[in-house]
Amino acid sequence: MGKLRPMQSVEAAAVVPLSPEETWDFFWRDPRQTARYLASSVTVEDYEVRADGTPRYRMVQRIGPLPAMSWISDYHVFDRPRRHVNQTLDSPLGGTFYGTFEPTAEGTRVTWRWDVEPKNLLIRSLLPVLRPVLAWSLQRDLDAWTKAAADLLA
Image (cartoon, rainbow, N blue to C red):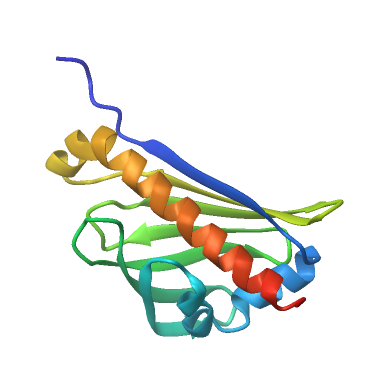
């Protein structure tokens, strides 16, 4: 049997027809409200912005057919309007999540990448099967969020 990869990346990307600043502000104005635009069933709890400007919160989400999971998103890079990086803590999946906001002729290309690093051996062994579900869910959420942002222009 081959060695299990400790981490696998899941990525989603979409172009939002807003400037990077407008896109960032739409998402980060109040993530508790913005979460309602995502396609998955998501709630944001215990949202706080620390003295250094980085947020930390608990996210509860149902991803595809998987049971609801919760985790803490703990940000250590929060560079408006270019990128954010957070650790996914207190979760069977774990890992590091990257969000980038790049200007394009059509608006802003938003890319979400999650380097999933399960701590649990069973989850790690199932990751090759779970990865397509996670990728589908991430892209679906980003597409729904992009549509909501685009509806601001309508």
